[in-house]
Length: 243
View 1 (tube, rainbow, N blue to C red):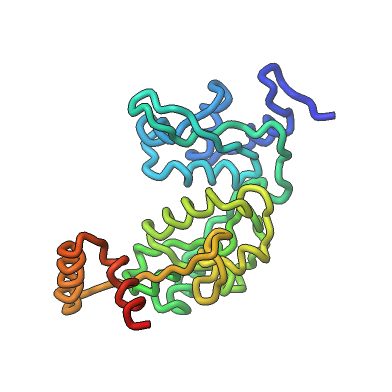
View 2: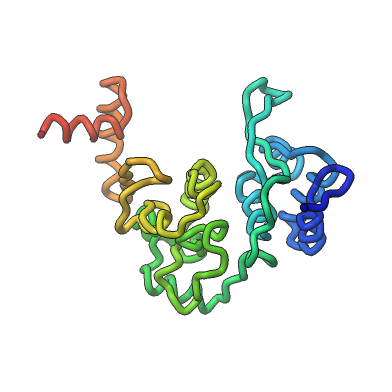
């Protein structure tokens, strides 16, 4: 039978919480140990984290189960995300200590392998703007990916990483099923070949316009604006008309 403290928090979760030293995860944990939950607004406005889900992932990557739910914002009156210890879930084995730091030589190898390109968009940018990410989220696969296998990692910029985090946060596989096979068929893990986006029947296409292509992009936006639609919808309509 699971043992709990006076607040109803399972003892195994509390024991794991004591071992966490990483600043961002520690901040979230300390708040949760005092308060019932923490909101996306508090993470951003009180603690200065512009991307709240990343702070929450830091805690989950330590093996500590958190539950996501909705509350009403006291400032906007709208529903916002909130997080609390998932008292009915178990600590995930193999997650203690969180994800490992990547050596510079490993990033250099990925930069060479992928030609300094964002994996999800194929846009080439300066290496200093690229971050290493597990193709299959750490919360699903833990540290199964070996650094010797470059195929298990991808390069993302901050924007792409935020987009992946938001999409994964709402995915049933990420939250409950934890199937690595499902992840392997997802756009956010292997955009080179996929059959779903966060378990939804979708396809996605990202186009970057640069240098002498900017005029063409502006023309597209102006035409879409005149038709009272979006550039994305206009491109889709052009292909529908051709078919």
